[in-house]
Figure (cartoon, rainbow, N blue to C red):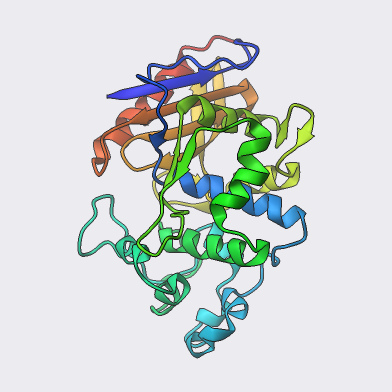
Length: 294
């Protein structure tokens, strides 16, 4: 079943039209990656984070033995755009060949990611390990667990109180897949993006970070583009073609925004590990957009 929440410039103030049954928070899977990116932007504005062109292994002195074969040149920016070139297999279905499963129990997620060869640098390759390492750097630099930083710097300012961030077997919040929110609260995050990081007169996320992270940086090979943990593409709506940005999650979880139309669409679903759920969610978004008039 697909469920949808929507806000637009035609529905003011913020209004969530939701078919989501009940007020329980929903498992968003990889939409978590996009929210992690927002947290990085906040911490960067506070002067806590390294520059995006910093080689990642320079931030891990304990991994000096891995500075070979070109891995020493992989940057923070390349982790954000999933173009590090590090070998990584992450199909939609979990199993023995899914490298993401190791993130749940490895003691050092950074070593787990970087202890593999470079295969295609600067080419997009979906990689949850990249997000896990970004979150680890964030926790180290802010001095607090990811979920605590999220509560203080993002969720509390937005008035989001009913949420959960699932943890792995070592007690770490799963930055790449563990966030659970109510659809209406995910729509609030979408509205925050439309407002370039402002909420009720306060700049929660730096506008420059919103602009840069939503901007398409790499081609994904399927007609879409990828920014800093955000997807991007084009949609027909209101008599023209408009750029959208989105957080995608396994099983049909979606947060779409179309800035030119002041449109936010949240879709949640239960088809985990089913590629068809994602296609149905994308088709539903296109149908919603196509129904808008100039």
